[in-house]
Image (cartoon, one colour):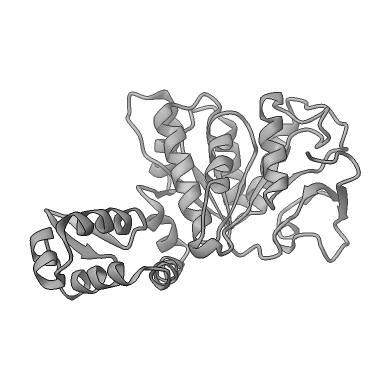
Length: 301
């Protein structure tokens, strides 16, 4: 159970605990009200935003991209709105590190106060509690008991982008708060990313517009890592996972690393039973250590 009000911290702009990255923007908030814990390292802060009226496809993308980034150590920032924002937070909360190593946190920036009686949207009150108890933070520049107002959300968006190295828009119509966040990100010298979509989908009109005007097209997490020059994080993750493998898993991986191989070849080289190989291959694929290319398995570098 989250203890309300007594767990709210106030960080003034003059405080050493105030995020340095947020001081870079024009008109940073004079203070932040915080429930939970802001991560100390802001180098891996990354925002994922989008429409409230998200498709199932968009929700799945937001969840999966967020989860994978958090597993690489990114802190996922969003606005805790329904739709894409909520899925971004949920994806980060679902992240798991090898052998329970630390993964990234998630930060919800609200367009309302952060007391239970003020949190908006009301449907995400339980999500707010989960974010707080899982090591993340729910924050706002507004007094804890301040109710949401329609003009608070564009103001909130400057904090979402201001706290982040980059902003990914997953789904957004032509007129969307997510596009406001993207515009603010550009003004704040942040990188902007967008997921492309069908020209017949109104939820893709905004993201396709961003790509047409210079946003980095994102078909997967690798596109984000390349743009931010952080591909080494994926290599480090794979090395961490490899350290936790069983002896049989290591034997099979070593065979695949020598040359791309099908199941029969792996069985011939390793002398491991086929049913065991199939089981281990499934685990290694889920962990993104190997991939299947035309029936042959190869190690991901």
